[in-house]
Length: 192
Image (cartoon, rainbow, N blue to C red):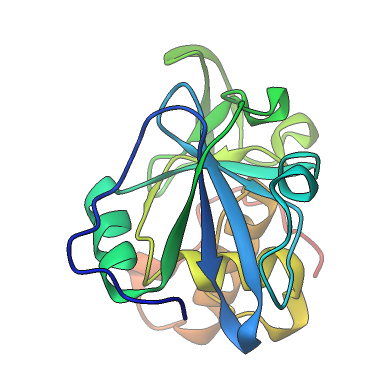
């Protein structure tokens, strides 16, 4: 954890860089992009590294985080603002997948508009994010653990399509008596 700051407020201007306190004393990093999403870098450290090291790391995910939860995380010391720096071109908005419940049909969105429809098992979309809004304190540390250490991650943490599919399969397996958790007809297994 970082020093708490009860007067802190989320800064959603493009380029704002945050350090995030994660599990097992890891520090992760995220930067606000032009669409006010957070681009999380494929980098974790035990102590905060240099800005150059951070922004020159590859981006692993670009996701929506509730700004009010970022404010709460800054106030509690779970997140720390490092400043505002040029936005990595890898932090650009990426296509996302809208996956309605109880269906295999999904819509891929690009630049804020629907681009095309496909099925959830389409190999071309497996690494795309499923649309969601994440909480800075309650969701992001578990999500980053799942991205960096899948064996240590909670089974129900989603994110990209391939992991959301595994979550649905595991939910159906753990709770077979509940029809809400049943897999849709014609489900294509992930073979995990």
